[in-house]
Image (cartoon, rainbow, N blue to C red; front, side, top):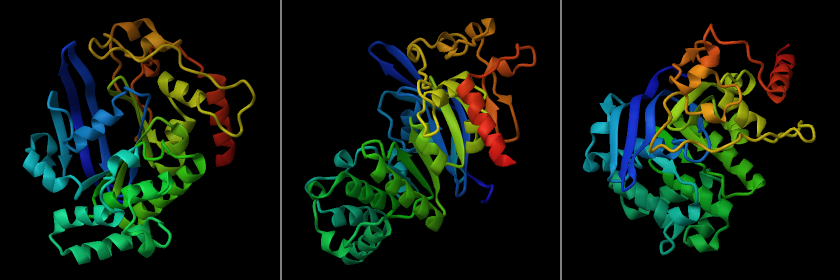
Length: 345
């Protein structure tokens, strides 16, 4: 995999002016996306995952105030006009949405919806575009595509509709594909099939993917790196193995401990107490402090910096400060780490 960055996000802040005040939705986010890699962004609802991706597509509401740098192909996306966005959105950066029923037009055939995206960006004939649409339908695993190109969305199952949405997103061979909870509405078997299709297509096309999810279980099979978000910030980032088997932030511990797995013993599943903070008035220190049983005094006074765990692994927790007391992660995390160590031998 090439190490060249296709996207660099530096010091991104996004806030929304509402009748209740200013909601500070994204508070200084930094990450890179490399060519050909999949970066998963994980966190509870309200952590800022979807606002981040909408910002990467220029789709935020009119009341959004954005600062920072989003550098894609040597251009800062923050400065683009809507006209400039229209040339990039769907062609160079495309999105697979969460619910295929709301992202497909019920009045238009599936084939035409895929072709429309191609015609818009490539100025080719309707016939050529429909030929390409048919090819894409086959690529995403739609059986008997020729027979179904004139079907309408309501005639298809949820899994098939989601394949159509993927075909639309891939229609112009985008450099970056953003998948926002693309399998949430599907059952586990169909979910696995869709993820397999996405992984194979990414390999064929060499595109980079940002995969948004609240489900850490999905991440292990699809991502190269993981960014854990909480209250508008990235609190931990690293390779899948680092974040899964050597997590450093207590929030990541909580997410992993609350994730069911097949080798789990009875009664082991934990939950994170409390709720995320109100981003109208974000806490002074570490936003997770009030829910963190390992919180130190400084957590309530000062935001932690990103501490380096390895060249690829960083976490924003005062527990990594050399002056912090030695804290043992929950047993379920230690077991996971132990099992991984065994596998490495």
